[in-house]
Image (cartoon, rainbow, N blue to C red; front, side, top):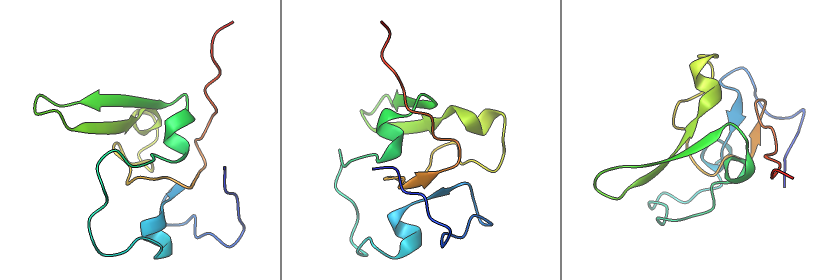
Length: 88
């Protein structure tokens, strides 16, 4: 489902979400929704807070400040995306 398009405005950030494209309704997203590319990216780390909230942390953000530490989900396109391959 990786989306790559020359029409995307990469000048603002290094990833694109449906919020940026105007595809998400104004109501709040449901908890547990699809994280998009982050769900299978080797740079994504799942963080669970003491209150039980779950966040996806982008490890690329530690070396490149153009990446959000906690990107808005789901991420549809990302320059830092690298598919996580299972060991073996």
